[in-house]
Length: 301
Image (tube, rainbow, N blue to C red; front, side):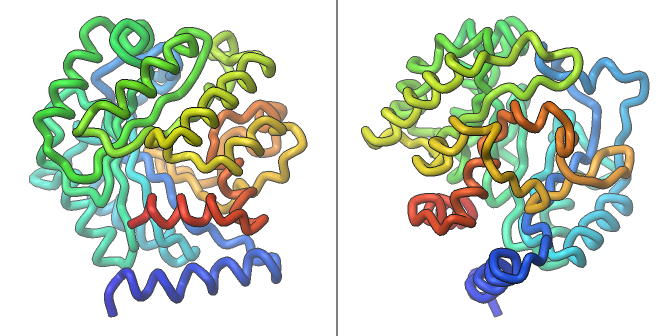
């Protein structure tokens, strides 16, 4: 039976159990395979830690099997920088193949695209792009946007998208980012998130008024047909984040040091300032919002 057919049966079964019987089974896993990175981004605290953990291939496979047993069927491979990971002759593509052989329907890889990415064979590749030109460079370092742009152009990957995390440094560049993605033939779509004020990065978070203005702007672009991954329903719910019924358990996190859990902000004051728009998307799914369900199916094609 193909993965597509399995997915058609599994997703409704998972939803009914979760929505009507309260079964809190994760559907998606975020797996951090390494803390090593080739950048020093202003919003990131990982590079400041003394120990840069890196999983072995055997450890990665063990964690994938664990996540699959929990009920997860989609996995996002993250870092650090994922393309730096290796274990002997094993590279990220070996992890992708292992995940598929275990039974995951879709494997996503996130990268900063500072080196060649054409060889990555994920079902979808997400490039972290925090604005165009000077906005991106202000967060990730001088010259990083030029390298990102070149590596995206040279990759010729069919399902390459970008993720922008909006903060006080780059929010005025949101319009330019939207226009850039729309006109770029090598980028499929853009996902918008907002900076979550984890300890040490609080100054980067937008105030509520500015954040809601940005959400309204993204909604306007979405309605005009710009390739925005976020659904309108999900974006609207992010304007009421403090009152939003969050379902953080839908995604489980596995970190490079082997620790497991849910979102690090769960059950803390930070949760009420969450910038991960997946919070709004999942709330909309559980409210049976058609546009969100359709966006989710397109995302995991």
